[in-house]
Image 1 (cartoon, rainbow, N blue to C red):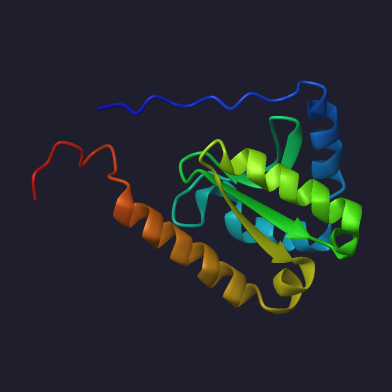
Image 2: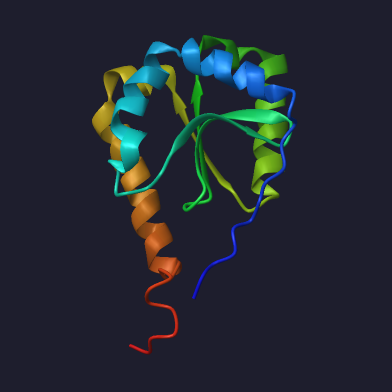
Length: 138
């Protein structure tokens, strides 16, 4: 059985900005991308700087309904915190999960970052039948 892909709309004006962000990634984004790119993390296809709605997600995986956000020093300012909260709420309204990491976590404790993501994936897989197993009665 084929699962119908849910298309998440996005503002086309964000495509150019997303491309610029990919070309000017932060050190923490580059570091995490080394672990996520090319389906090397549990076989899932992650995209970076992906436009969703009126936002750009740092990392997005359609199959997992997962957005990963990396927060640098600017995310300590009140106006940025408010924007982050609004963005997260709107993405969660689309049944996406948003996991946030501080840049320092990625730079200094990558093993823990990857453990958190692995834990999410294992929980997700427990509750989401793979298309090949749908209809099988175990």
